[in-house]
Length: 249
Ligand SMILES: [Zn+2]
Image (cartoon, rainbow, N blue to C red; front, side, top):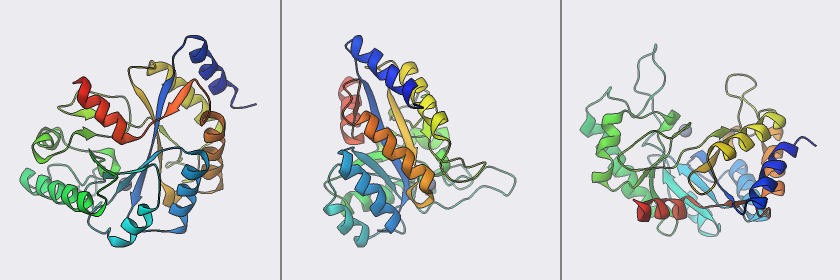
């Protein structure tokens, strides 16, 4: 039983009368695909809410129509065109200071407005920077153009707006570029849940539907089967979490 560690963690929360908040962010959606259908079917089957980080520039009506019938799906802003502007020696970045700050913020404003119009019922005013990288100077300018939350990968640092980070990446980018080992992922999830102290922070699962192989999809299936109805945790929508962060601030 490789899920045992996670199950034990959840059971311990129940005995303490607490529950961990979980959320899922899936990146790089632009249009309906078989891979996206597969992810949305998992959301449906287990009634788990998901947040799609949609790339504004290339997306359009087709994705809007597809998500119209999807329940429990939120949409956040994934940069503008998911284009790298960093040099060949640097890590990839769309939202660095390789271009004037106003140019970058102008694109982020355009992305915000486009997605808000395309996805009126499920839009969340949250920025998900491509490659999880954004310059602090850009972050400073986000509240003025409407953003209320930022989501990157890793432990939360301080920011001038709510942070809703992801902590467990199910893809092994440096190795197989497929799904990571399930035991490792169950252990990482349990570890983050404990570190997050239920009631104070969330545990964010990061997925990339276009890159899911059988191992990745099977992990999500197992994770949802284990957690969807466990009283030691609850799956939350980004919309609700951002709302809560706003009222707590
Ligand atoms: Zn991306």
